[in-house]
View 1 (cartoon, rainbow, N blue to C red):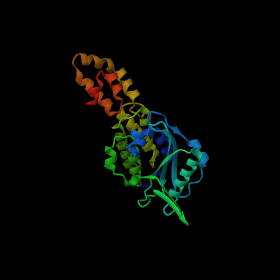
View 2: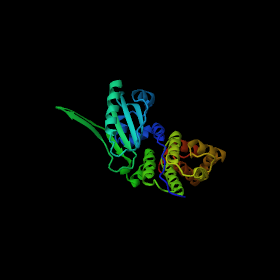
View 3: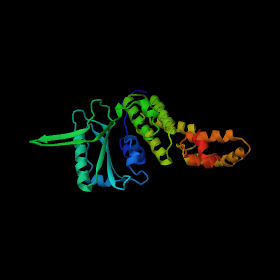
View 4: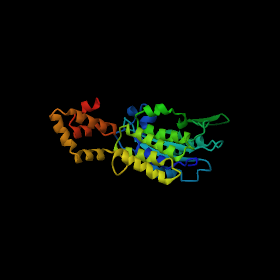
Length: 306
């Protein structure tokens, strides 16, 4: 197949941020567990954001996605997190910093609540890395600093070693940037690799579905038939009719094969090897340890040591 510049599906960022937001906070902010009350639900203010910033043409060469989220802190107070994802920069335009400042003052004017903002740059321009907006005139000056995360700066090995599910999102975006002209077979191999990386990490069913959708559809195949082949290969890999190795699938599989009862009986008869083998398989698929314990009869402590 001929090599082309790959198209990426920008709007997927909006949904994946919502599906993985607690993981996103932990990934970006090392002290997230201490600062944010992650047990409380997030409030995604998409409609409110659009009322402040009505959708408009982003301008030739610039594509971005915005997410405004209300979160709670450990002390019970409210905080707003603005996530701006810049997919493709327009070299020389340089308006991201100004845009981030406009976001800040309008959000502050509306809600009077602290705002932390982060710009995720998923573009391929190495020199494009804004992180501050400033202006000065006749003794009056202003400086606005914001968090900036450049995907192109990230190291692939570090992302692969990070067990946070959001690392797979960043890895997907990074590989999309550095493999823009790869052919369909090469792209399919990358998607299989990303799927395997996803399955190494523990997460709930909805998060896993979101990650699968992102790695599958973020970068498009030139030939749509290759997408069908990829999905069929994933089904074969996990041995079922749809595309996710979820908790429900594995527990259902255990029930149908009589593994739950069989394993308990096996443990009673001293056949712990079978129980341990199944528990290890479940653990690799990201199933909650408590559910593995229920399905195998092993203790949580035994499973944690596997």
